Amino acid sequence: MEAGVIAVIGLCALLVLWYGGGHLYNRRQGKRLFHWLEKGLGVLGGEHEAGWIGSPASGARVNVIHASPPFRRLELTLLLENREMLPLWLLDHLRGKRDGLIIKATLRSPRRGEVEVVPARERVARGLRKEQEQPWACQTGPYGLVIAHRGPSTQQQVRPLEHWLEIYGMHLHRLSWRKTDPHVQLQIEVVGLLPASSETFLADLQAAVAGTMHADN
Image (cartoon, rainbow, N blue to C red):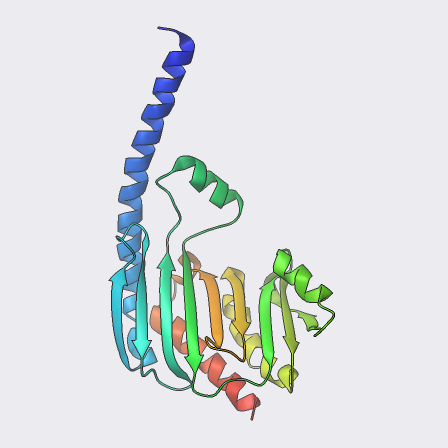
């Protein structure tokens, strides 16, 4: 048998074994992360409904309705890395994609200003600095983050975020507060949050948003 044929067979075998191992790992990881998140949902109040996105290997989604102030409702989505397909996993890993938590929240009282918090190296940060029509005021945050804001009294609105960013900014991909629904959108690496309880993480987020709303009045 030629060496090229052997190499192709070996690669196919590797990809099949990788797919099986990646799928099993993601199922366990999905259940672990969802169990962690579920423990803290009581902090948000209201009623919630949850379900897998296809299967535990892909992730899960939770909808919270009639949430406690300052929230009205929230959507929390756990998205796992695509570990089943080796080439895609390598590409995503090089891009910095990890198991993530996405939170979209509707506030009881919309903000008058807008805030964006992103890593300085990201393309979004460069775009914020170049915005001319409605320019953003930018400042440096912890862990190489850029904090951009525009609109009435946004400097006062940013201050209550600073303590939250000192704790969780290391794992942050993006935090957006807008005047339109969903008012708050958060993207964060979830694995870095696991040393703390989800109750603590969600309560801290709730307090940071509430502090910002108070600064807005």
